Image (cartoon, rainbow, N blue to C red; front, side):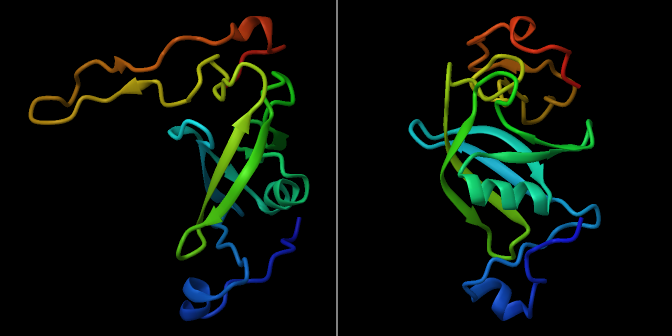
Length: 153
């Protein structure tokens, strides 16, 4: 699929211009970080291709490209936890997107049933390498087995 977005222009235009010219990587993807519009905090990280970005802009509902499944997906299409885009931003060199969203249903953004995909802390500091991950906001808001037809990979 060809992109409907204009190719990135010169450095100055890319960083200071007012045209959306996403810099898709060699696989045709751009990074997308998703945060909670009400409570703040990171909910998830995913990738978008041109089709996902176009669908997100046109519908106001978050769409992504699933690298593991090799297909476009609308967040919440199985779980009902659809993400309404409140604001969509692009970073300075247009190779990353930031979606501020409201999550429908239980408010869970993660396919594991948790509010955020980032529910484990990584220890840092001297001697921390190899230590166990620590739970953080790890309570499940729903049971994945009761929502999804097949396990997510």
